[in-house]
Image (tube, rainbow over all chains, first blue to last red; front, side, top):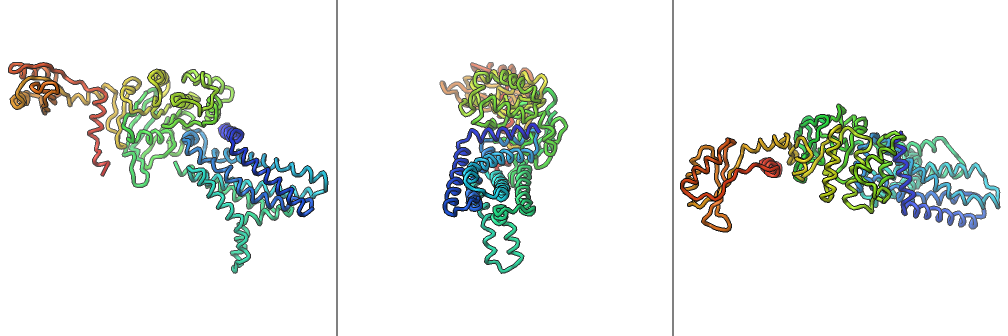
Length: 235
Length: 318
């Protein structure tokens, strides 16, 4: 357990000493702030729904940049040789790195809560809906990170890892749109079920369904399991 | 302590290691000697558990490194070919991370850090970021990392590479001092290193073990193909006939020396018997002028070249 903690602390050290991490967090917070102000003044409604939708798209672009170095840099720096000869199982290394990335994600989300201050000062927004939105957003981010971490483990090149992750995440986000020109009923249901945006949409509307929560957890679990198995297989 | 049983490693259709078997006993320092690309790094990676053998078995302290590598990892200190360093961390933060990750008890981490920093002479740079360090210091931080947690087995891939002569001396002292209660397997392509540090030497080329013995044992083995060289003023054909008539001389190579073409340099391949020099001297000195005669004892270089040049390079290239 100490080993997992050691890697987690090393990861956190990296985030706080990495200009890329600061840059991406800044981009995300500035972007979110912009969308928030824009949506509030455009609609005049004290809600976060539209902002959450915009944050979702922004997240698809920020996550790959955060996740690309997770394993790719360990390969190119030769430090994988240390990580894989420590008294730790591959899955423990995967979890430690993932927990570090999730911590950063949660800090980033916490940063966006500054937008809530004016909302509560000047209006009476629906707290439960906002809470549901945040839960959905965190789950979406966790699933995206797990996918990004998997692709970072598959290549030594960080840029390649980021590009593949962006493509896959955009695919999962927009796959739901295919429902409209589906002739087969089963295919339409399947496509809808795979859609990151459809599930996220429910949370944004204030709906926390077990099915949607389970969906994001399952996606994360599958990606992390593949990640650990790949590391094990690579030996 | 370390045992390889007919280990092979293939990457795709390429075989890197062919049927390699050897043992390293507890407390022994064994040098792994071979040219670049001989398979030294791959073998050490298998012993460290970083990669697994395609066939055969690698065990360390009885643990199978293919399946029980995590349990064995606590007993192994490993310095890979490229020291596995995080450039942005400073030296003591890095060492603290490795100590924790290796499972060193929290209360002992401070003492462990002090111990390895002293052993590897890192006091001066312990607060410096790793990317600012010279190659020699990077190598020493790599060595310090391997020593953390007092592992019973040390695997060192080219431990003295990148160090200046003074540092090499120090690194050897460190490694030798660990031989008392550690088992050490180190790879190198620097020949004198193995005679200075190692009790036994394994020579490897093209992924095959060519010989494993004590340095003096290897020397004895090669002495069977001994050489006597002499300088003599004589006609080439006559001296050739005379020398080949001497019992024990099996082959000759004759060429004039560079300074004076009347003097011939002759290289005789002789038996392992004592007194071969005397017999040759008698045969030559009675008729011609003998300037110089010496029996060449094989140096480690010669031993190494002897084994490496006899290894089936043609087969491996085919």
